[in-house]
Length: 251
Image 1: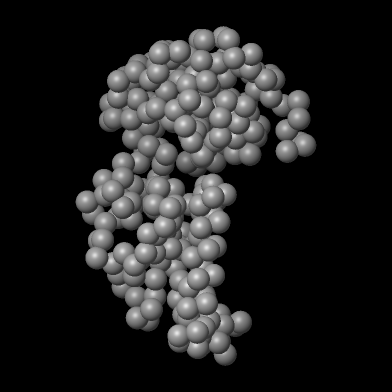
Image 2: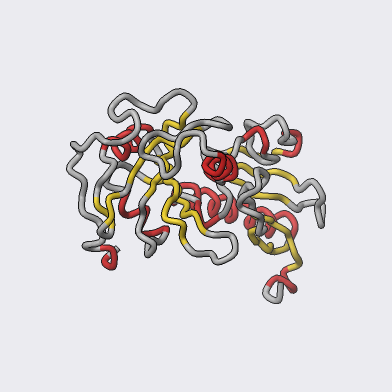
């Protein structure tokens, strides 16, 4: 975006100061999620994504905030679509963002994992482990009610599975045709969905609308249910409820 011009000084792809730079992540660390420290306190989700897009396509970002004041803590997480993108970011730890040299390291994937040398906290610090365990990008799919790979998902309710999105019957439906549209990958909120996932959500929405109008002679209401993004059960999902066409506009 134009407003971000000059905020990021492009990395030279040669610094190699990140955790385990050039050799991939240490055991127990994510291959695609990076911890980023020493970030400017003026950072936004958009400017963070813009800063790291030079290394590879960014899937999601998260800026850590104080629970009470909501002020930035100066660190966050960025998830890349590929391991190559994360590797380049770690290898270029120390590049300039807004006048600060950000420190990039692979994020621990397991409870109790240690941060690399580029992390903001000493290895094994209790506060660091708590942050990693609670972070939405690091949530385990086996703790989620909606991840298809989770043993907790009720697969008998699944109606259709696409490339990025699936449709399932609501467990406690308001009407018999009440369904959910959900991304297959664990995203805590719709605001974090990549463009290709959004496109498939829209495709399913149009298909359901066409089906309801043709078969049931009714319209639909679609809304995203707000959830706690720090919960392991916080999997983005959209409620789709058919309503009579006469009530569609008011609904």
